[in-house]
Image (cartoon, one colour):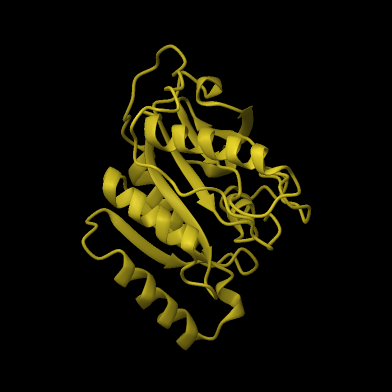
Length: 227
């Protein structure tokens, strides 16, 4: 895939707003300030593609970037602190859960986490969710330039231990600053995006809030800022 050809398509507030022509898409999820948007920008060699901000809560929508016909990278809202009412946070949570559980074109999940903090509660929750849903998972340990080699290896070992029993899960170290690990990430994404997992169709609709699903934990304020 030519990730440098990525272009912004749409910001979706709800599941029904997501592109109906998607054949396969990979979602990037992560806690606020984990380096999620920076990782997408590094992968695509476009520093302005995914919005980065020091203002908490700026990434509030599901942002779609087209790579090829019917192939997308998806930047999910950063999980954590935002200067908005709790009711708004809970609303984000509902729509995020609906996307993760119901989006038929979702081929894999990239979980972005700071290599210095492996793992926080949100990360463990997402790993458990991917395990239950049997969704391919790739852990991106960002800011690897902040640690020495021994620290990087220790974090990788810890991450891989958390993925035991998940046949289609992997982990790598990554540095947006040094552009370390870009080829490894691209190769992983190529494997997911190459084969369609869905067919074009009408927009997907949100289930009722009582519909059983693999649930996520309630939103909890986090003192970090958004990536």
